[in-house]
Length: 88
Image (cartoon, rainbow, N blue to C red; front, side, top):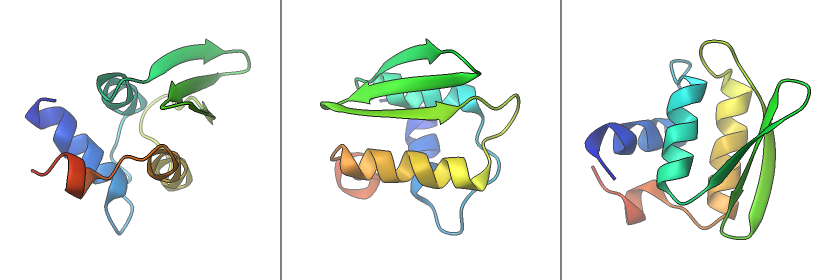
């Protein structure tokens, strides 16, 4: 995982929640972690990672703080820990 992906991954886990993460960056990090991204109907996208599945709404620009929290919760459920697995 390159440095840019690591920074985005850590931003997804950061407190307070970052409001400056693009949907495209989040998708790239999830792909880098081994996730399979699929475009869903209704402006949504799904990701399958480590036998877990979640669906998120697609933002035109930056992810909303609630979306960042949802992605963080999904990553935690899938067994990903940014500090442990991918330190900066």
